[in-house]
Length: 122
Image 1 (tube, helix red, strand yellow):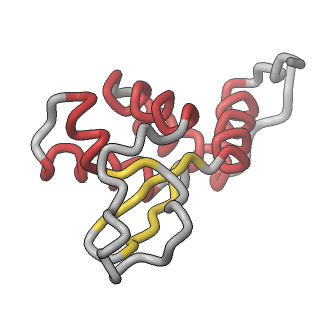
Image 2 (cartoon, helix red, strand yellow):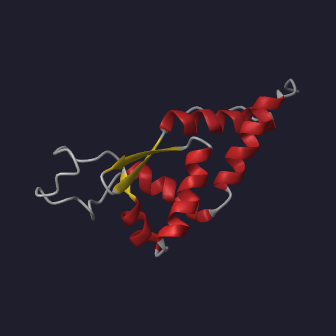
């Protein structure tokens, strides 16, 4: 039998599990892992953004993919951001989100430790 988990590991595991408990948020992670489609790439005349393409997926892309209102998409992304699974970057009037793969791996490891299940090797 494995040793009991620490309180911090248990709290992390619970937070990650809650964040991943919604099918929409799981699908959002898949979209963020795949990258952006480019629906809101700004025009060259827009001086609010640097010329390089932004990193991540725009919230408007997520809205379109999931048929969500802006407030609902932002709610789900906030949950993922608060547990550290996604990173947000604001560029001009656009918000872009990207998957934090290291945080996802750490969260999955915390879940494995909290349940006493050894993580599977890839």
